[in-house]
Length: 169
Image (tube, rainbow, N blue to C red):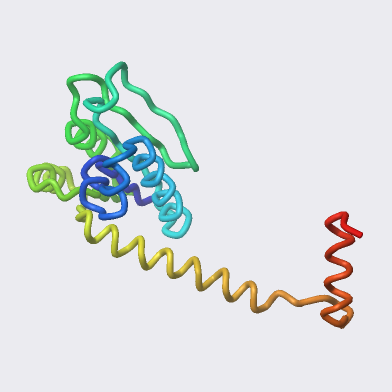
């Protein structure tokens, strides 16, 4: 099994779309990152865990699932880096490969020591772009294979039926 641990605020600060969104609405930037990671999880098959520092959301540690992506807010006085390092140790075994998405140089060296592989924010964005292109390609091919009406009808008749379907006369 492959697990991707994502340093949430590090990625938000590195991706242009999320960085711009963060300027007006940090919660929206977090939500958008989780949505994109859900797409990545669906296409890659990786288990994805996004970790955010409690620094921006004070209080007790929180953990929940959103779009089947695990989202963790660290405890106060615990950084995302520390939590990711602990998780890299606890989740690591012979059947699991841990990947960590961050551009934090210090964290990269710490996770290498735990046997995890790192993905920089730029590399993850590039992979996400490829995943999104793959999704669009799959949707397009499905739509092209989808048969039209079983009975050939004129455009005028199709429009009349559509109006009926919508309840218009």
